[in-house]
Length: 116
Image (cartoon, rainbow, N blue to C red):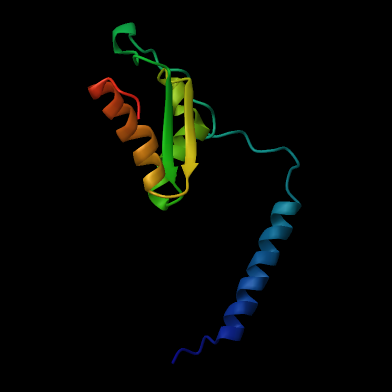
């Protein structure tokens, strides 16, 4: 067993946190300058031949961790940067909703010429 007990760890962590807060609290009151990653990226130069056919899309997702790239891309403006200015990222209740509503029904209607 280690001589470093849980109580000693908590006390050390508390003192370290307090020391950090005191030293940062006594510093300058100016906010830090934004870093390169925090500034917004300029719009990309998209060749008109490479531009998307339509600027709108509806993207359905289920609230799982693998949907994070869609949400982050929407929040950071990546769709608009590449010409997709009217993208909707919509949370769905289950797997049946996005697949049935936005994928199979319009595809079947386009192939058969009927409405479903």
